[in-house]
Amino acid sequence: MTESEARSDRIERYAAPERVVTTEWVAAHLDDPDVVIVESDEDVLLYEVGHIPGAVKIDWHVDLNDPVLRDYVAPEAFAALLGSKGIGRDTTVVFYGDKANWWATYALWVFALYGHDNTRIMDGGRDLWIAQGRELTREPARREPVDYPVVQRDDRTLRAFRDDVLAHLGKPLIDVRSPEEYAGERTTAPAYPEEGALRAGHIPTAASVPWGKAVDEDGRFRSREELEAIYLDGAGLRDADDVIAYCRIGERSSHTWFVLTHLLGLPGVRNYDGSWTEWGSLVGVPIATGSEPGEAPSR
Amino acid sequence: MTLTPALQRTVDDFHAMEEQDRLQLLLEFADELPALPERYAEHPDLLERVAECQSPVFLFVEVDERVHVHATAPAEAPTTRGFASILAQGLEGATVDEALAVPTDFPRQLGLDRVVSPLRLRGMVGMLGRIQRQIRDRLTQR
Image (cartoon, rainbow over all chains, first blue to last red; front, side):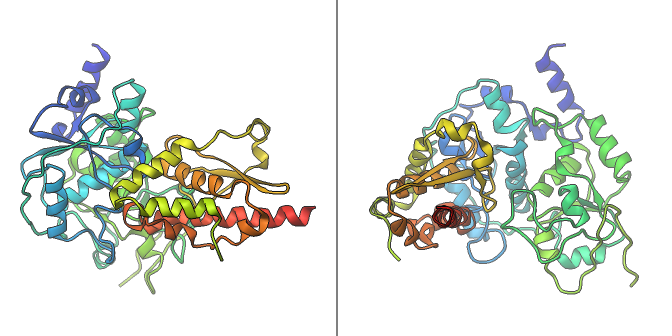
């Protein structure tokens, strides 16, 4: 079996294999009019440094978040954004980005809130594309704007709010932050001090599974068997149909949401995007510290 | 509180451009960030980590008759490189008084709030604060 065949074989074993494409697939679809490649990075300037030819840029912060409310952009703004990028309601959208696709999966999750389901992730992200010596350009993509319909966002199915989390205590919760943040030794992620909270620790009963366990050294998703060992056997999600994942602002947990939903096929996974920056500053909610999950408070 | 002539030119250059084009200017600054002088490249212990930035950026300030700022940040962090480059170029050769007179919220004057976001600009505010503190440290060490 060639390396390329081995990769395709690994993807075929996922619950929803159509959700993951290889760099080879992307390279072969650069001129496909039904496909738009979207780069989403943590660094707002990385796209300008060089991107996949024809790829458009969507920034998690200035494009997907409302500038005033702590929430995602409203339906009209979402429609205007996608239309301006040449994305129609039926367009196949392939996301890729830095940091093993943190922000790519975050963007994909926001698209999912708006019911845009024809979406994929390029396995390995930006770094793998570059490591393979594939072409980059600084030429901004020019796609013809299209009309994208104004659709309402579904905030119930894939998204959890703080009251949902309170009502959920006792059912499976996954904390995907670093072990230090989980234990309460620090209120911020290493190297992210400006996104802190007033208290440190984790939501009681949450299992600690740092998001990066789901990817290999090339930033590609681990195999189905490896993921099952981590999340089903290791974190006890076997047969769980109601899981909430959280991190600091919801971006790393989007990655875990993607893995649990599309690679392992768990049916009811939600992302708590308020995450620790909200929970760790809320008055009166329970918090556990240390490396053990802790008990759900009695009601 | 006033800007150095070089920083004022940078502010003017950003504001002369359409908002969306300002990222291209920031990219030019990122490309221009000079490599560290060898004496610092071999002495990482002399460099100060800027904890306010999401990406690893390190800087060191020299003060002789004038101020000289040296900084390094990885290629995968072009925004951070751009911020460091604006400050290093804008403060190069300034007098101590000129460098300390730069207002701490200078990064907000660049007109990048909507294309970069205030959250990310906080990293540059942190960088400037550390540069000015290092200048004061150098003076007391004399």
